[in-house]
Amino acid sequence: MDKSKIQLLVVDDSAFMRSYLKRLLIDSDFEVMAEASSGEEAIAIYERCQPDLVILDITLPKMDGIETLRKIIQLDPQAKVVMCSSLGQKYLIEKALKIGAKDFIVKPYFDQFISVLNNVITK
Image (tube, rainbow, N blue to C red):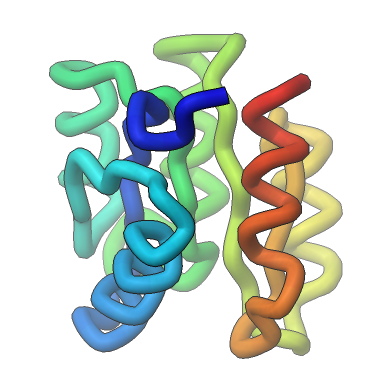
């Protein structure tokens, strides 16, 4: 699998976290095609660009990650979305998985980040 051909959208309201995730992805030969800081922006980019994979924070301003996920899945039921969450949000992760997220990453523990993405991509 040529990971550089997999186009990713990174969605997080924190510029620091987007930068950190982007660095991890690029260091692992992924292509980050776009970044978004809000759910609304993520949906617009998804509609326009149809990325192969979305990394989506649960905590976002205005429209949270759960609602953003719901709208992305409505646009594309086959969308591959990996949710990011802090430790205290287990119920939200379970909800996201029921809606259609393919997996989740617990912030700030990214030691399994790339392997999770590789698994989601190859499913």
